[in-house]
Figure 1 (cartoon, rainbow, N blue to C red):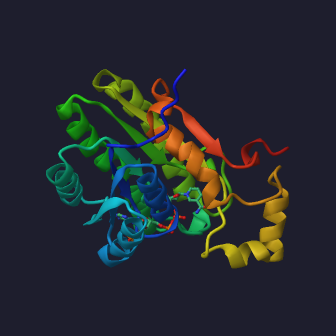
Figure 2 (cartoon, rainbow, N blue to C red):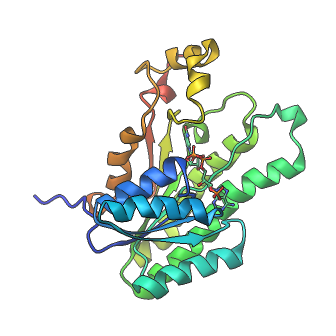
Length: 255
Ligand SMILES: NC(=O)c1ccc[n+]([C@@H]2O[C@H](COP(=O)([O-])OP(=O)(O)OC[C@H]3O[C@@H](n4cnc5c(N)ncnc54)[C@H](OP(=O)(O)O)[C@@H]3O)[C@@H](O)[C@H]2O)c1
């Protein structure tokens, strides 16, 4: 039996790839053989990610992209197709959050979170799927959701609602686009240790949160690589509409 987890010859668009998870995803997908477009609003930061990919021998380009703007999304997908002839894989990773009690939630912040995390994933997903369908070769879409798409925590209502809706949107994409050989799956990370949250997780409140994770540790970027590559590649050729949770058991922690 053969197992194809390589992205050799594939073209990939990663949104929100200027830093954080997205930058890691772009680098690892390039290391797996994909030609990777690194897209976000801050193009200079994307160029830095591209420089690291090129230094490792990969093929890449930086793209300015605001996922909340249909015009910007159309231009980004057209740039990938213009440069590389096709789009095979989309990682819908751009996302924002805020910590706000629901009683204090204001409309502008609600709109910013829903527009980026949900409408943005719809716009980029639709533009990518149209390009994939026109080619006739199909493709793979990975929507980066969160364990907060499956359960809730305090003060992140807008974020949780956006990610739950993204999990549901993933199923609609899978259902409607299967006829075009486009697979759509959600990747749902638990809390991942990054430069931005390391201090919090070293505090008493952060340590208390980690004690509720059955594995008793935070996720690491490297924990996401295998699941991401699985969903992007032919290793998951018959997998669509699923939600792959990568959280050390956090979602199944005891009530
Ligand atoms: N970190 C975690 O523990 C964790 C856990 C579960 C899920 N996630 C999800 O993983 C994804 C990445 O999170 P992260 O922690 O890596 O966040 P991050 O470090 O804040 O990075 C967010 C990325 O999204 C981009 N972005 C934001 N608004 C955008 C827009 N309108 N258009 C295009 N790009 C935009 C940012 O780039 P620019 O500012 O340059 O546009 C940046 O590259 C998010 O969807 C998040 O919800 C993260």
